[in-house]
Image (cartoon, rainbow, N blue to C red; front, side):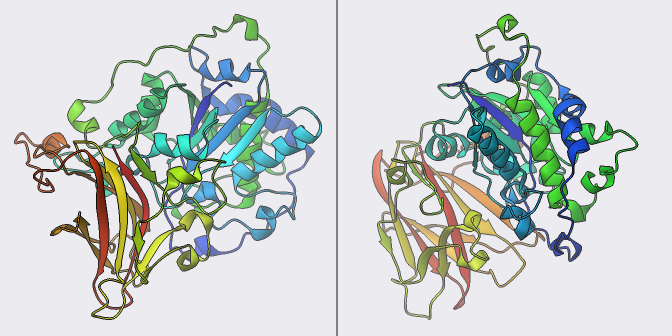
Length: 471
């Protein structure tokens, strides 16, 4: 089956603006005039960059339906979507992957299916936050994906996140994007990557798209091409303000229509398009910048927080389970309004003297390097001041970690440890002097090891764990 990776760069933060939490009342269908524009002039205007190697057109020529996995943040997942739109009770759909899926389902009923959709978006993430887990996540949760839609444009629109200004570097968004894209292109069956720009372009994303000859689909360019007389134009404009990180259902519907129109249409000159994918291009960013974003294309262990019942057949075993769970820990999304993208292992600190209840342990396979990546939640918006100590094989605590930070958004953060080497895996963090690895465990060997998280802090403080990965 042909593979595409549509890189859709999405909103990731949980915004706290009062205006952004208001319900969206506009649920009137956009009408036939919009449908005609989206499937014709709008779709063409949205394709602001066409790959010279015709990467996207090559997979559009495939006779098999395009298997689409969507990765992104809270906007893509559907945070603040109108409930009626999300439930299909109106003429609009929200989020936009749902719009693509419903249009594809309609086509399937008519015997003309061209697209299958899996929405793997999760809230509170960014391009540089997930480089180590993107390949195993796709391989586990969407093993037959031929398309991945990826857009971190809102959370990557500036470099304020700590992951983008490590050491002496002040803006690592370009290096993070290249690592992310290159990891996907290095898969056994490398997908075609299409960068989809939502509210506004991100310079780092566009630079990598140009360097790697990727297709770019722009929502704003399509909307700018609207006829001046279009009665629906104001309803689908994505206002460039902070309060529009999560746009209304009209924008989701319009964006989904444009993407579906492009994916579902076969080019008229398929016989002239080369079937051979082009080679991976030369690297764009220096090694010391790219080294800030570890990767793991072939994990030894991958435990992730997919909601129960959402994984493909046979994948459940790959997701794993804790070796021991104290009473203070549970696998839940109840602390986040039961949102499926918020499933994870939640620890709530018990009373003093209940240390056994405050522990959760995982038995994981490691290489000699001892590479461990773990993803957890940080936020400021409520009493989330939990801490954990991380212990390897029951020995002294290796690391103390807090879940509270001063940023105004919630954020899924990934930490990387190399337990089996005294050398720092980040090549000196941009400094001329190489740093030693303070998390080195002398005598560490390849094989299975116990990794334990112990809750610290005052009673009722919380810590949430999403993903564990070893290489």
